[in-house]
Image 1 (cartoon, rainbow, N blue to C red):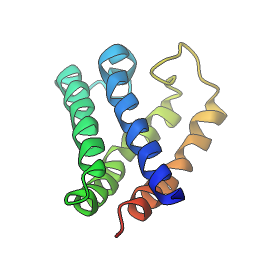
Image 2 (image 1 turned 120 degrees about the vertical axis):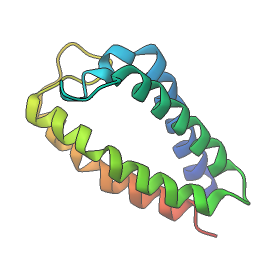
Image 3 (image 1 turned 180 degrees about the horizontal axis):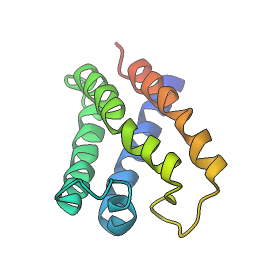
Length: 122
């Protein structure tokens, strides 16, 4: 029962994060260095990817694959989080985020990866 709840909570987090990509697109676009082109299309695409992964996690037949893809996705977006911490870029929903919080936030990425791999296992 706890694993199922953890699965639903994770999927909900990804749905909410996906919504954020559309409602706080300026904040998410700030997470990219200046040299990255097409920031807004990337922000919207990653929001849609998060919705798709959340849905796939809820479907038993696609759950394991979704867990693996989600873990890979979290690894791929990690450089944006590192960039945020180094450049002290505030969280997408904020004008200022304490730099210490930005560095502590990096510690949660491995936790999210572990979480999705555990809840997507049969």
